[in-house]
Amino acid sequence: MAAIITTKFRVLNAENFARDIADDTNSIYIGIGKTDRWSNQVSSTIDSAPFIPNDHQDDASEASQNCFAMMRLKAGDVTTVIPRFNWVTSNVYAAWDSSDSNIFDDNVKFYVLTNEFKVYKCISSTGEASTSQPVTIGTDPFTLGDGYVWKYMYTLTAGDSEKFLTNAYMPVKTLQVTDILDDTDVNYAQQQSQISSAASATLRGIERYVVTAGGDSYTSAPDVTITGDGSGATATAIFDVDNHTVKEVIMTTAGTGYSIADVVISGGGGADATARAVITPDSGHGVDPVSELGGFYVSLNTQLEGVVGGDFTVGNDFRQVTLIKNPHDFGTTDIATSATLRTTRGLRFTSGDETQFSADDVIEGSNSLAKAYIVQIDTANHIIYYNQNAKTGYGIFQDGENAAYSSGPSGTSEVLTDLVDQADSEVENNSGQMIFLENRDPINRSVTQIEDIKLIIEM
Image (tube, rainbow, N blue to C red):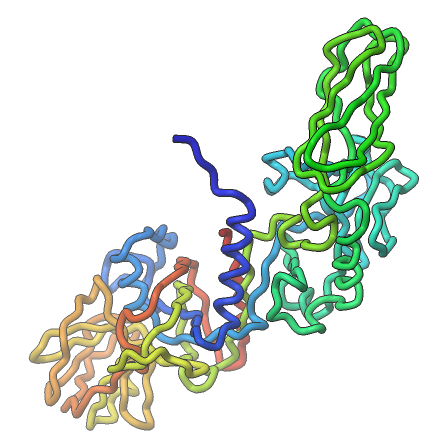
C-alpha cells in the first residue's frame, strides 16, 4: 500500500501544537536538566559527545529524572515558522507550482524575505538571476523589470523578528487560521486586505502554463483548450517557427473555480505538444501564508533569567531540554499551572557541613547506600537538592542516616549528620507527556546570565 502524509496534515499539526500551548486548559512546560556528565561512569568529570536520544519510554523516563526545573510556556512563546530565504541579487528563484511535490523542500526558494522584512512569493520565474528586489504591497501579483512575477504575502512585525527570526528560519502566520492571535501579532490591515482578495476573480484560477513537450512538425500556432471543474480560462500557444514546436503557452484569461484542469493542444499542423496548468491555491495567493509556504515547523522561544521564580538553580549546568505536556502537581492528578516548578527532591540535615560539598558531587547514604548527584545546595536551610539516574541508581535515602561524599569535584570527605527529613519535588515524578527531548553540550547557568532557548520542531 502506497501512502503519504500531506503538507496540509503537517501544517495542521503545527497549528494545533501552537494552539495547545496558548490554550489555558493545557500546560506545556519547557524543562532543563542533566547536571552530570555525558558518560557512563558515575564519577566522570569529562563530557563525551551528547548521547543521541531514543524515542522510547526508558529514555523519556530517564530525562524526567534528570530534569531539575520547568517553566510554563505562554501563547507568545510559540509560532509557526518556515525556512528563511533572503532575497539576494543574482540568485535564481523557483516559481510556486501546484503540481511540484518538492516545493516545500528546504532548498526550493520559491519565496523570499527582503531587507524591509517583507515576504514575497515567486509566481513566475525566468530561470535567470533575479536583479530587482520586490517592494510593492498589494493584493495582485506584479512583474518587475527582470521578468520575475511576485506576490506580496505579509510583513514581519518587530516583535516576531526579535523573538523568532533566526538565520535559518522566519515566522509565518495566518490571521484567520490562527485565531488566537491579537491584531498586533501581524500587520492586521495588510492581512485583512489579503483575505479580502480571496473573493477576486483569480481565486482558484489558472496562474500559468508549463509546456511539458513541444511536439513537432507544427506549421502554425495550434489552439489551446482548457477543461476542468472551473470556467473561463483561456490560453494562447506560442509557435517556434524555427523548430516547428510549441515553445510557450500564455494565460490570457485566468478563469475561476478550478481545482483540476486539462490542457489540450490541437491543430497547427503538428502533434504531440503537451502542457499543464498551474492553479492558484484554494483561497488565493496571500490569504493563508502558513499553508501556502509550508508552515509545518514550530518555533519555541523562551528566556531563563537567573533563578526564574526561585525554582531554577544557578551555578550549575544543564545538558537536556524537554517539553512536557500537562505534568501533575506532586502527590495529585491535578495538572500543574504554576509559572515555574522545581523538579528535584531534597535532603535536609541538622549539620551545616553541606557548605563543604559542591554541585555535581555524588553523595551516598550511610545506611541505605543510596546515591545521588547534588544539583543545588541551600545553605540557609541545610537542604541538598538532588537528581538520580541510571548511573547512580534509584536507592531511597532514610531519615536519620548520615550522608557522605562519594565522588565529585569537591573531593571532600565530610560527613553530613542526621538526615532529618526529605523535601518532595513540586512535580509528580514522570507525570505528563514528554513530547520533545534534546541532548546538548553543557550550558553553564549564572545569576547574571540569560539563556535564550530557541527550539525548532518539524511536524
